[in-house]
Image (cartoon, rainbow, N blue to C red; front, side, top):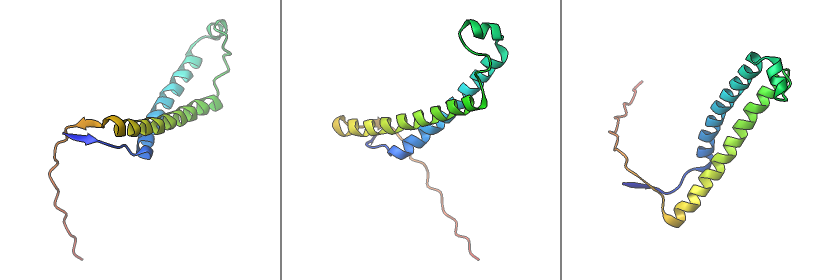
Length: 107
C-alpha cells in the first residue's frame, strides 16, 4: 500500500473545472429543454417568464458552474492536504506498470 500524502491544488482544480464544464453543459441543455418544451402557461403558473432563457442565461449558467467547480476543487485539495498532514493520507494499492523501452531514432 502506498499513501497519497498531497494533492496538487492546481491539478485538482483543473480536473474539477472539467467536471464543472460537463455539469454546466448538462444544466444548460436541461434549461433549454425546459423553456423550449414547457408551455408558456405552465411556466407562467410557476412564476417564470417564457422568454427568460436566452443565450446570456445559458452562458451565465455555464460560466457559473465552471467557476464554482474550480473554487471547490481548490478548497477540496487544500483541505485534503491539511488533513493528510494531521491524520495521514489515503492508502492506495497501486499496480506496478511495466516500463516501456524508449526507442531512439537515429537520423
